[in-house]
Image 1: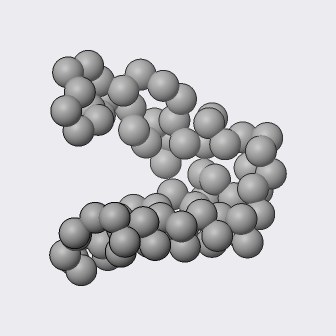
Image 2: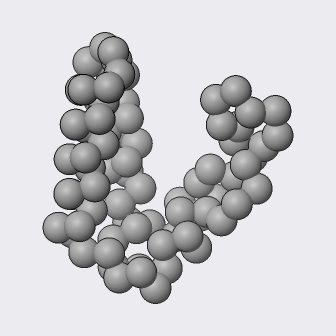
Image 3: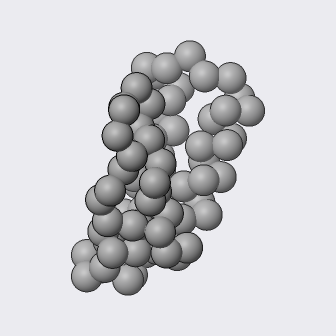
Length: 75
């Protein structure tokens, strides 16, 4: 998924995101499956503790991160 994040706006931002796409941002970092899953656990934990999100929204966030794993793990 090259270009993920391109042209998107952060919540509350007035300017579009112009940084690196997911693949470019993670290339050469050699992130393992274990490290990726640990980060996912942290994200889910934060959603459960610090934010009052409904289950559908949480599932959407998890699905988005899962869909990006090919651009993050071992690239």
